[in-house]
Length: 373
Image 1: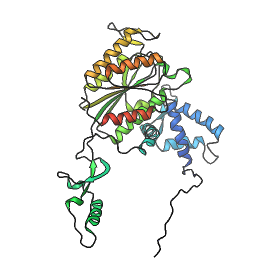
Image 2: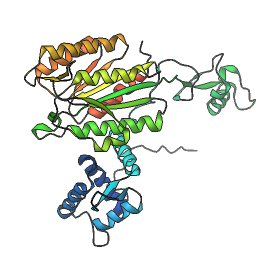
Image 3: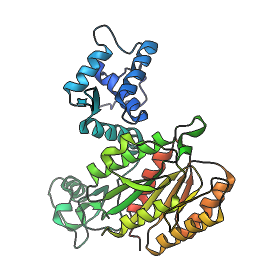
């Protein structure tokens, strides 16, 4: 009997866009706009109407007003009554979560397909997180880890089908790795330079924070993430407030941000602790003992930078690595970050806005693998 050999190859066909309802199409655009406007619903809808005029996003059968009505019906927005009787629109917690999920899909979704496994340590052992790799059974492996189909296949190959026999040498288990828990503080620079020179740097930083928080909330609930912002002063913000994050007319008080980050991490019981700092400018502000501010936006002030180096060294003694994501290319600023990183023995990236999210997620995954002492 002749066996037919089928050749393998690629089948090319015209791309067909996945079906989306009129609401879903507008909702994807709206989530981008409401993020850029820091939660300002009216401004986001104004932009959406402008885009509709230019690109014909709607039809007479489904208009922007229909979309707004659907947002209300689906619980994404609600009417509010302001002081004086004037009305307005608030976004709800449901939309806040949708924005975090949208950011997560944008930043992390494309990485999941190319990565094998998630957030694992290098130590093998009993765990509920599988690697997807098989190995021979070893004494001490739990019976629940035996892969029955692979073990039966080995038995048939080794002993034949006529007389079925299953020996210890036929058994295969799925390898696992122990998972560690991580406490992370994400510092976001909200000084005025984050929107200077026609470049919006705060929106990518905000998206990264939303995506990272959603990842931790949904997949690693035992991890912790605190987000703090720093300008002239520093303060923590709630995850639900991330869509509303804006820059202000501030200088950059890096020392205050680091101090608050370390205070937060001291209270955490997790063995793995880290600080991520997103900034685009030099430190230019300090809190003085008498309650005043020392500010110097001109160049790198040795008085300010020395305080930064001291904080970096203090974090190192506490076993807290600092990873700096510098959204700037000035050589003298890079020199400051290099010295700052050396003081902490941490890491630094000089990154553009496009790959900021990918770098943070890769670093988060790498740091979560090991116990930092």
